[in-house]
Length: 512
Image: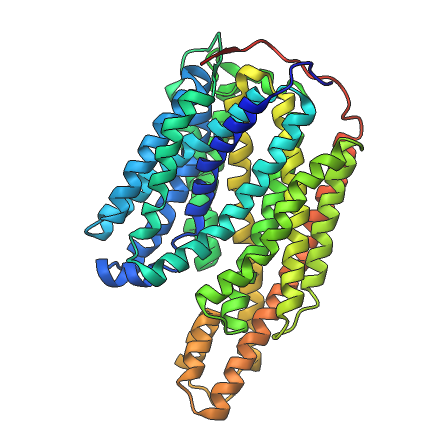
């Protein structure tokens, strides 16, 4: 179905304004990568505090996405966007001038709260501004490419800023963009909200946070620390609360997530496929960053600059996929995206310990396939949702991405580390003291650092064994990722083969 109402110059200008918060939220995921040593030194942060400086942002973002999407439907998506931009800008200043680790952790948490308002608000507003299917698909393609590019840009920009300024500068880059958003969004972006919202359900909010936070925490820590019973209990507790949340949404009249969203099967299929895509994407990111630095020996900034090259292909892939989807069945194009990403992982299986070009090609192919999937399934899910529920729909899409990314990092990280530890134990020089071997088994970074302190041939043998073990673990994880992506292609074909049925477009209130 194609609507007769087409967006004009005003809507596209407003869309450009909405890309500002999207870029900043995605950049904030990676902008701290190079700042950690300086922050640790200046704020005397412990290892636990370092962990929370990173994770407080991600936890607040993931835990509040569903709540903020629902709130935006009720109070207005533009209003929530402006509130979130204010919080994000203020928290950026607080983070930049934090006097201790606790203050920085608190500021990062508020940044996550702001991010949770910005992401579903921007996607929901795109859904409302672009009522023509072809235009909306094109906008979502650009949106997906900008989000993927922002993650890569964040690490590079952070490295460049730290070359010339103190670590707080990586936060201050948010402030001018948020000020521009606060000035231009009221002038260009129309307001949209549900004309007949249900009462806000506080219990559903508590259950949604209780479901997401333990699961995300558990899988992230498993990726970093390995499997243990305590972390499994966190995940199981989150799943139990998730079941209670779903039961409440199905039975209460004031459901936070409208049951109307799932009346079109394309919506649920879109969320599931988006989760699978992000699962595969984070599996690749987990290994390639370490590969560039610890296997190839690139410095942090050099590794980040090399890592941006695949992003150039991503910037083209998203919009191109939307053009192709206008002329072909979306289910087939989405399945093709999964197959392209699977081909990228197959290339990754061919890398050795000195394969910069091949690794970058593999990353570019993987990213192009994943962005193709994410752009089209996000558009499909939003297009299938009633327009007045766009905020809630966008929040579910984003929550699926967060969950898929955390799960992919945990799953592929655990597989890779299991192979790494097995191979290092088997292939390390036999004359190594037990304590040295245990240190080398923990991480590749630890092994390379330990090897540097050992006498010539022994140190070289340990470093070579560690690098070979890491690459072998990356290959094994790539096999698993390929299987997941092939499953995604099969699901896309099966679930979306008849994806040409019209979807309802209820009225929505709009104003300036």
